[in-house]
Every structure is written in C-alpha cells, then in structure tokens.
Image (cartoon, rainbow, N blue to C red; front, side):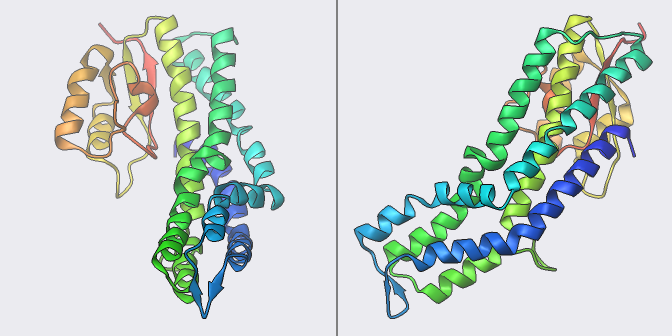
Length: 272
C-alpha cells in the first residue's frame, strides 16, 4: 500500500468507527423528532405545524451530531491534512530534489480545504445528502398522509448499517473523508507543479476490484505528460466511468480518476 493511502485509511478508520458507534444514537434522536410531529391513528397529519417542524429537520440533525461529539471527531480528522501535506512535500524532495517552502499559497489552500471539509461533513454537505434523504421520507409522509410505521421502517433501513447495507450517515462520511484528503494533497501537487514548471505526473496507487478503467490505464502508463491530459480525459469520458464533472487538464491533479479515487498524480519532470 502506498503511504498516502495508509494515512487516509488510518484516519478514516478512526472517524468511521465513531460514526458507526453513534448511528443508533442518531437514529433514536431522529425518532424523538418524529415523535413531536402531529399524527392521528398512526397517520401523519398534513398541517402547518408539521410543515414548520419539517423545515427545522436539517438544523436539528446538525445539533444532534454536535451533541454526540461528532464535530470533535471531525476536528481530529482534519489534522490528517498536516500528515498528508508533510508526506506530499517530502515526495518532492525525494523524487525531484525540490524543497518546497511553507508559502502563503499553501497555507491558504490548507485553510480553505479544512473549512470546506468541515462544511461538507457536518454543514451544508450533510444537509444536502443525509438530512435531505430523511427529510424526503418525512415529507412524503406528511404531505401524502403516510403512516408512522412505514416512516420508522424506511428511516431505519436508510439510517442503520446492517450486514447487507451501509447506513446513510456512514456512507456520507466515508465519501467525504477520502475525497477531502485526496483532493487536498492533489491541490498541493497542483501548486507545486505550477510553481516549479513540472511537466509530467506519476500516476500511482493500488488497484482494487472496482478500480475504474481510466485508473487502470493510468497506473499502467505510470507517467502522464501534462500536455497529454486533455487527450487522456477524453479517453476516460469515452471509455471509463465516474470522472468528476468538469475535470480538465488544470484540475486533473486534484480530481484524478473521480470521486473516492485512491490514486495520486505526483508532479515530476519528464525525461525529454
């Protein structure tokens, strides 16, 4: 396993363990929220009170995660960025003989990445995925006269991890955590590539059973010339899958093979 994968996997494991342990508690708190809504004979009432209560759900979930200490776990997780940065800049010393100073651009990139990660994990990013999914279940019941029992069943199936299915909260944190660190280090690599006029990328990382075709291709090629990235992106669009929309030669080092990509695009000098 490559070192960056180890850094990401270790920090993810700790965060996701905390999320998994708190899943039942979050579920119980959601049931408490539902218990405050108006119902009669086991059916939700389609009234203004329920509509107003439903509008508070996203804020309620954010408060629950804070109460349960998830926000503190997220604060611990973003410290991973320092280990990832040290590793990434160390590679430049090893591979290219470049000692990259801690300049203002790198500092501002870290600040932006940390704030964006926190927002995606427990702010608007959480609201647009996990909270919205559950809110839709509730909204369909409120405005369609659904039953309490069906809502409890549907939310349980969505929210709790079982042997057959991963819970929605765990899925949300898993995707955001890997992408946040991978894209942060990708941003460092892009800054270095531009500052030192590096014209090639070493595409490295482990291949697994569900690796995308473009990642298999690029790992096999080992070195990608930056001038060829537009052609390679077109190849991925035509033959591969899962590219992040809007991927182009300028942001390729950040986006790499797509969401949840395990690979690094390390800038270096081509052997002309």
